[in-house]
Length: 176
Image (cartoon, rainbow, N blue to C red; front, side, top):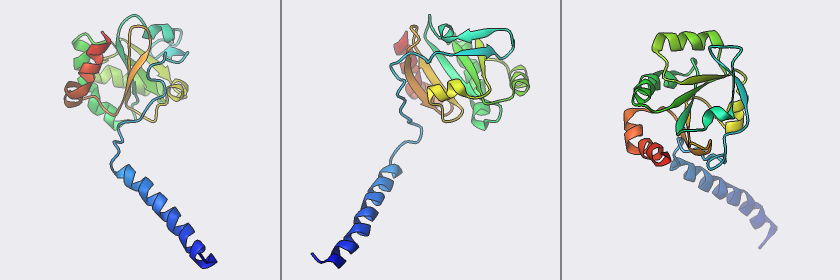
């Protein structure tokens, strides 16, 4: 092949590789973000309780029973839409720990007082360090944690009756 042919083929091959990459993205589910932490213990942390500045929580909070760790914030409109359903799940005896993510404490406390509190405990992560360790991209995200503190599943997006009944309930029941 001549040099001109090679010079033509290089951009063409780059274009084809880019097109294949983008085409695959059309059929991927943006709600499925793989987590390297699935199957591993929750990272070590110490965070304040949102209501009590003097109370600290660590990883031991997330052991002893199956539970959900729900990452939320007042600036998140999807968190607002899932909040009522989380209260229903908590009313059914499902243990939910909240993690207020990159938010202002006063706003978060006001939110919980106004809308009701589905959380047994609410962790305060103002700088997002535990969120970073968990690989959180934004809120809401919910981690399913078994009684030994092992992350079994990560759900990105809101939890609503349809999502719960179609897939998440079975995951939670499987952790019991």
